[in-house]
Every structure is written in structure tokens, then in C-alpha cells.
Length: 188
Image (cartoon, rainbow, N blue to C red; front, side):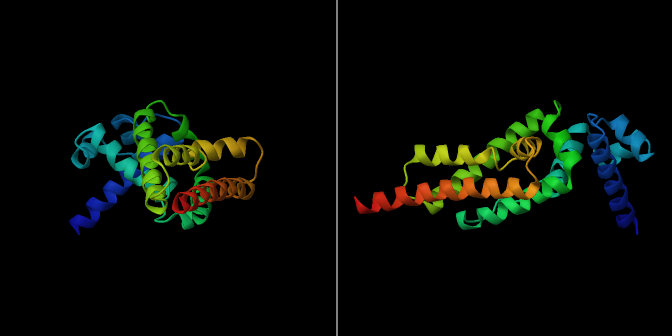
């Protein structure tokens, strides 16, 4: 019983933090406490400091707004669909996070992690392609496979479906270029 209550209180704190973020506020212990209608002391029982709360919220936000990178290049087209639908479903949260100064250091780390994961995926699929080309391909795909890329396309007037199709075309064009280079390296 006590564990269930503890879990509910933790969930309530996380949800209040998300609501603070969606409202455009930097999450603070005081702001979260007010939004959750609980005392700051209660928050500190579950999260000993703001950094611990932010770590927990980042994990929650990744599940809610993001989507785990697929395991093969062949799945990238489907990944675009899942990712962009997640952004569309959570538009307000996606936009606020992308433009929040307090989230910038966290997002900088996440951007790097995502680029590196994309580079590893491409390197595994195209082992004969030189590293500089793979780095360029990963960097070129990283932007459209991000909240910033989605925001840009939607703000340019693309529907979510049109944005998905556009990014899928970019992905397929990039993959075809890598396939050609891989074949060329084999033939040498």
C-alpha cells in the first residue's frame, strides 16, 4: 500500500513538472509544489534536489516526446513516422522544450547522443563508407530527425504528413548515396 502511494506521489510530482514546462516555466521545486498542491518538503522526499528531479523528468519527457532510434537504417522511414507523430501529439511540450533556455544544456547533450547513435547505426550498415562521409550523413539527418526539424517544417506550412514524407525522402536519398558509395568501395 505504501509503495503504491509513493509511486502515485512521484507520478503526481512528475506530471506537475511537465505541466510547469508546458506552461513555459522553468521547473523549480517551489513551482512544482504549487502546481501539484503539495509542500516542497514532500517533493524533497522523492527528489533530494532539483538535478534529481530534472533527471527524472528528462527520462519521462524522452518517453513522451521522443522515440527511441530504430536498430537499422532500413527502419529509419518508420522511425520518422513514429517520431513526428510523437511531436504532433505533444506539440506544446515539444515547442516549449525546443525553445527553453533552462533545457538548453540538457538538449545539447541529447543532440550529441542522438547524432552519435545515428552515426553508429550508419557505420554498422555501411562499414566500407569512409568516416567523414558517415559523419556528414549522420549530421545531415540529425536535424530533420529532431524537434527543431519538425518545428521548422510545420511552421513552414507543411502538414505533419507532408513533413513526414519530406524527411522520409531525405532519409532515403541519404541512404541511397551511402549504398552507392558502399558498392563503389566493394568494386575497388
